[in-house]
Image (cartoon, rainbow, N blue to C red; front, side, top):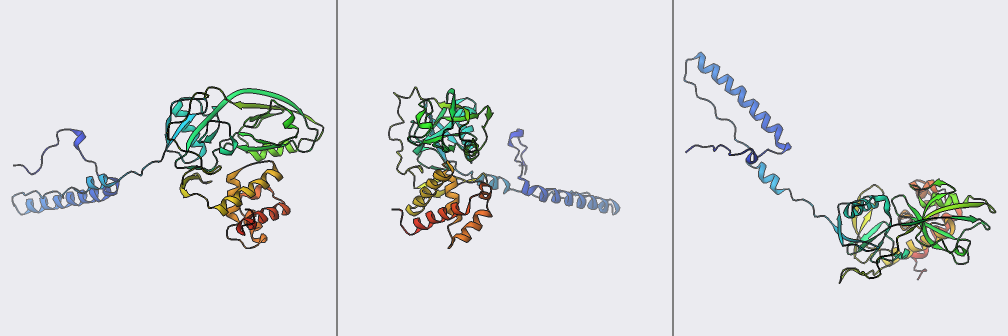
Length: 351
């Protein structure tokens, strides 16, 4: 009975992993050199030729390959807000990648997605997908609807808009202050995407850049906003799957753990925020709304984390200046206001 059986097909040949390749080649070279020396010695001394057996194959290569177990992937359920079958979304590490996966799932261009809400198909700005998704959250994607252009006279310094973005290059209206200039224009609604300002395309700009452009318009000037509203029709008779998740905590999903998108492009599973952290982040977001006309939970979270281990406003200000938030050019007074929100939350004065 032969010691080695010939492989029947190429498919059965086991290729060793790269880690063993160099060792295998070294063993083969050593064997060849030894074989040549042995042949020369046998020929010189007129001895019968006895070939030297080759070194054994790495029998553990296959077991190493089999032992490599892939990491489990998180799977999220998704529907289009205007109605669709339920899709399964996985394999993303940022909001942009999430939008791309949704677009691939439903076979339409990714730039058709305005924003996503969690656990509701309605245009509900309290349920916006931000920097985190609860592991039990159900994602609803809102597509582009009707475009519209409105001419506005800036009769006051403040327009009354709070602007946020979808994390993928679209700024849109999150809140309209009652009695403000914008509130008096019925065609402008919460959820509208700001596409152009006086003919200048602002797609790809962050929400604070758009807010700054609006703020820089002088009082008395007339300007034109091109808006795109979210598609609103089609879901009236459709509901999420039975027994689906329900939102338990405003803006942060229902799961005890969340998938958080990091600025470096990685995503990590973290525990949900405790009450003190949540109150502090909410208070910071209120200040961002009041002083800058923007709303950004992830920015508020970053500010909170910069103040986490600080004991005074000077160290906090230095931490902000040393971070990428330095580009915002926060004034000293605003830094003091932010520090006040952080310390109030720590001391329980925000309850």
